[in-house]
Length: 188
Image 1: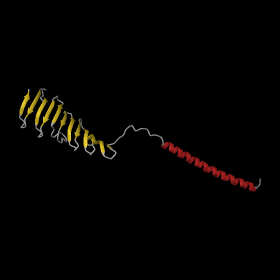
Image 2: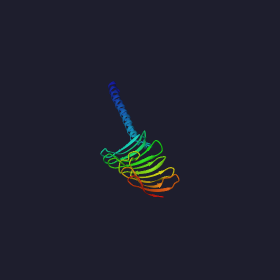
Image 3: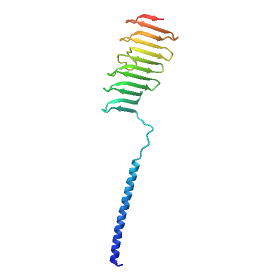
Image 4: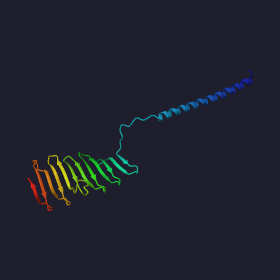
C-alpha cells in the first residue's frame, strides 16, 4: 500500500470514529431521557394522612359550602347555604362537651343541641339564640344529677309551662303559668 492510500484510509477511519462517538453520546442521552420519563411516570403511594388547620369546600361558583377547622376555642364543622350564611354548625370546645346549632336563612340560630359536663339540652327558638339560648321558646334539658324536663316560654322569656323531674328527690311536677307568671295549675 502506498502512502496516499494509507492517508485516505486513516481519514475514513477518523470520520468513522467521530461518527461512532456521536452515536454513543446520542444513545446515552436517549437512555437517560427514557429513564427520567420512567421515573416521573411512577405512581406515588397514596397518602395515609392529610393534615391542615382548616379545610374549605367550595361549589362550582366558588362559594364556600362547608368549613372544617381547628381554632383556639376548639374545632367546628360549618355548612353554608346558597346565600353564604351558616345553617348548621357542629363544634366542640377545649373541654368536654359539644353543641350542634341550626340556623335559618338569615343566619339566626333557631335550634341548639348542647352537651356539657353538667347537662344535655335541646333549645328551640323563634328568635336568635346565639350562644347559650337567650330567648328559647321550648327547652328539653337533662342534668347529670338526674333532674330534667320540658319548659315552654312566651315571647318575653317567661315560663308558661314546665313538666319534669326538677327536685333533688326526683319528684315529678307539672306547672302552667299565666302572663304575669302566676301559677294557674300545678300537679302534684
